[in-house]
Every structure is written in C-alpha cells, then in structure tokens.
Image (cartoon, rainbow, N blue to C red):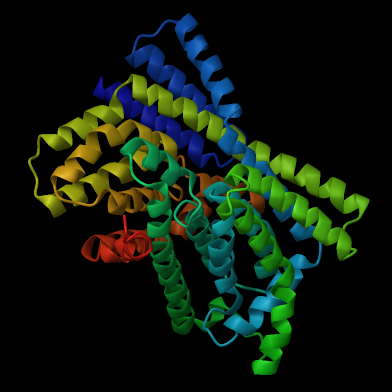
Length: 438
C-alpha cells in the first residue's frame, strides 16, 4: 500500500515538472482517479459520480467569482496607462530603498490583498501589471518572480480573507476579530519581504539597475497624483466591503465596474482594449480555475483515503508540549499544502487540530492567523502551489524556475510563523484593542 501511495506521489510530481497548465490539470485528475481506484477500490461508476459532483460544486463556487472579476480588472489596468501611473507614483516612494521597483511587487500585493481576499487573484492581477515592467527595466527575473509569488499569498492573510471566513465559521470565532488579527501579521510578512529584497540588492547591486532618479518632497507629492486611480479603486472596493454593501465576491464586480468607468473618464478605454482585456481575463481565469477545480478533486480523493485525518490523529498520540505541538502541526500543514488547497486543509484538519490547540492553551483567534500563514506556504510549494502556476501562465517561464525563485520567500514566511508563535500579541493586540468590550 505504501508503495502505491509513493508511486502516485511520484507520478504527480512528473506531471508537475512538465510545466504546462494542461498537464497539471490532467495530472491532478489522473492521480486522484488512480488513488480512488487502486487504493480505495472504488468502482468506475462511483468515481464518475464523485467527479461530476466535484466539478459542478467547484466550478459553481461563489468564491471563484472574484477571480475572473479581479483578473479582468487587472487586465484593463494593464492595458491602460494606469499601470504606468502606478510605477510613476511608487517610484518616488521606493527610489531610495535598495531594490527599487522590485518593492512594487510587495507593495502592490499588500494593497490589492486588502480588496481581493484571494491569493490567486492578487498574484494574477498584480503580476499582470508588474512582470512586464520589471523585465523591460532589467530587474533580476528570479527575484521579481519570487517576490511576486510570496507577496501574492498575502491575499489570504490581509482581510478580507475567504479562508478566515471559513475558519471563523468552523471554529465559532468572530470573523471580525480574525480580520483584525490578520492586519499586523500581514504587514509583518510584507516587511520581511521588503527587508530581504533590500538586503539582497545591497549585497548584489546588479539585481536592481539604478533608476538614475532622485525625488524631493515636491516630486513625491506630484507623483502621488499618479496613484490616485489605484487609490480610488481600493477605496471603492474596501468601502463596499466594510460598509456591508457587498461581499468580497460582489466587491470584485464593484471594482471591475469602477475600473471600466474610471478608464472611460480618463479616455483610456477603447473597444480594442475592452475586447483584448476580456479575452486575456478569460485565458488567465480558465487556467487558474481549472487548476482549482482539479485540486478540489484531489482534496476529495485524499479525504476518501483518510490521509489528512490519519496524519492529524497520529499527532494526538505524540503527547507533545505546547510549542512542540506547534512545530509538529506546522510540519503537518506544510505537508498538506503540497497537495491540498487552503479551504480543504482547513475543513479536513480543523475538527482534530483545533481541540488540541485549545487544550494546549493557545488562543483560537491566534491559531486562525497561524493556520492562514501555513496555508499561504502551500501557495508557493509544488505540486499544487497556485501562485506558481499563475506566474507560469503569466510569464511563460518553466514552473521549476518559478518554484526555485519562491524558495527564499517560503523561508521568510516560515520565519514569520515562528515570530508569531514567539510573540502572539502581534496577532492578538489589534483585536483586543478594537473589541475590548467583548
């Protein structure tokens, strides 16, 4: 039995290293079907029923609606001069920081994460804007890809976050407190990325070519006007969410509509740009959503095989101390992140892991943030690292190259998890202040 499981894992990695979205989609399905047939002994009719049910349920998930809307929003921005305005506006803010415009990956993802709630949507939208610009300006490709893969995962940590909503419902924890708890850890991860980029570029200045520009306060103030279109979009999307007018998925439509209206007012939107952006959004969204659907089937197959439940149950038998438990759970979630999407990880493991965490004396709100950081790690690890596939689809670079570029940012996220464990008040301070009366 162990040999069969090992063979399926090897097969999955073979499909992954082929580096093409279609092969990844096919590989996830083939491995899932083989596992159900060979290991679980399911008949073909039952597997067919499972596949049809998963395909319909996953493809019709309301949460997925945010992805094509935000991707289309990014496609329109990419094809108008708003992307150039973004760089002109951010350039004065990062011109004195080693690494220059590489920091726009981190800053852009941090800002966009506050309106998307989706890692894939954040990576696709910001990546559509920044990858071409950074490449044309001669920035190091590996550092650009890695920073974008890592920073794109902030879409899960900085509120609104779909995974946090699911965790709050399952753990019976206030979603508002979870959202508040994710803000400072999100800024912590963003700061670690920024610091790493700066240190790398200090050690090797060739990674980021000098811009040759230095801005005074007047120049910075003038350039800030170029950020106005992006800030308007952020305010509109955030305002629709936090005012209660729209859900995150509905806010995606608000942002897309606002982008169309804004570019019309700026006389940037032509019929050609409208059609091209729509077709580009269809291509990227199909790539992202097809992998999401295939991953959902893999998650279901692993659930039938009881893989996550068996691993989590084994942890309960180790009789560990509080911090030993956290280390083991971190390794457990990193392992699950290799094969499962964040929602599946949360739903499958939480009924077993949450009681262990509460019994060990950890705050459930803090654990929600810790769990999201663990899920973020899965976004940049093969073979089911969604951010890696999004970037592979956007840039055409081999998936192995993208995965290698993301390794330093994976390690930085692990460091962030360790810091959060050592200093839990980073996550708990803001909820305590905002909800002190509760």
